[in-house]
Image (cartoon, rainbow, N blue to C red; front, side):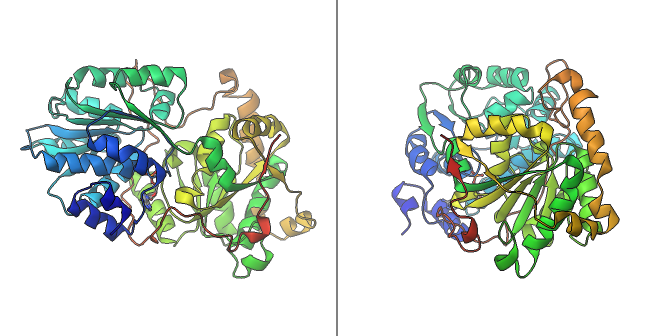
Length: 477
Ligand code: AMP
């Protein structure tokens, strides 16, 4: 009998967890499930990767089946709001898995695809609806959906919602929800503005806080290499080549790579990196807002299944993406907002595993590193360029070596198109349309299920393969 059964969850839910291979609840699940089963509201301060989806999904499913209700036309009993399409699709997929042995329907709606089919799917009502705010409001405005029957409301990633300009849509949603309901409000950070937003949704909540950001950061071995922007491509190519090689355990500087996620600042930058890697014989794919949904689905699917072990992503596209076995995160460009760095490196070291984060720091990015170290209270381990870097780089095929365009990117960042925005990151796909807050274009759905992934428990991965770098992370004084 698993510890989950001691939490009082219904048998079909326990069976679904068994199928997933989960035996022990994660800390947030341990803390959140009992009060949620009692019907309390919840204020959850937790990042993705902590198991928070199951923390809200499992007790909600339990409550929905404990008090069965007929589906109402265009209605839903549980509404989960998520900032991006990827995350919405992922949550819905997880919900379907946990509800595998229950007679509950799960529907997911988001922008960027025709609304007609989604509206038709809602006609007879659904039990659980996962949505991005823009499309949710579209469906409500076209009378394809009503929130009158919502019993459980979940707002996920509230800080990201605010970042993406969804505050006005969220207030509209708040006004439409029934007064009597259970509300759950999750955010990775809880500054005053988010706490104020939370007050509009939750009533006398239980507060659950897990894994403050620095804790995740501490589990990741973090390296930084000072390198000119124009040399980053060659350095990345060489590092990936070494890490993906069969003898990587012995020779690769950053340990063998299971899967690597490479963050670039721009969509074009992501495509360029892919071109260079492919030219060097390293299969890679990109996900970002300019890709069609089919392309993104294919890229993510290939990455999940291991057919492609290197995925290049922009921040928005990668937000909340949960892929097990991401051993390495590369910051090809350093985010100029320190929290973004924490989100990025949180793509590795998920569910208790350890991981490696490698940052390529151009001279004009050094100040960002200082901010990051201050936030995470972790000092990055400085690594010099490999001794024979220039020679190795010179031997790469030309497209894999040269990255003159990257200089142009940097120029824009500092003085060009983005210059007027100061330190603000230019958000991919962001659109502010009089406060109605459409889902950002960047957030496309992915259909990839979790199938075929290794079963995981909340236990740190052993040092296998990464041993040479243990102790690389030091706390900054
Ligand atoms: P989340 O924070 O919801 O994105 O979850 C992070 C990952 O942990 C997802 O892949 C979940 O499927 C997985 N997970 C959630 N709960 C557990 C658990 N109790 N044991 C093992 N894995 C889990």
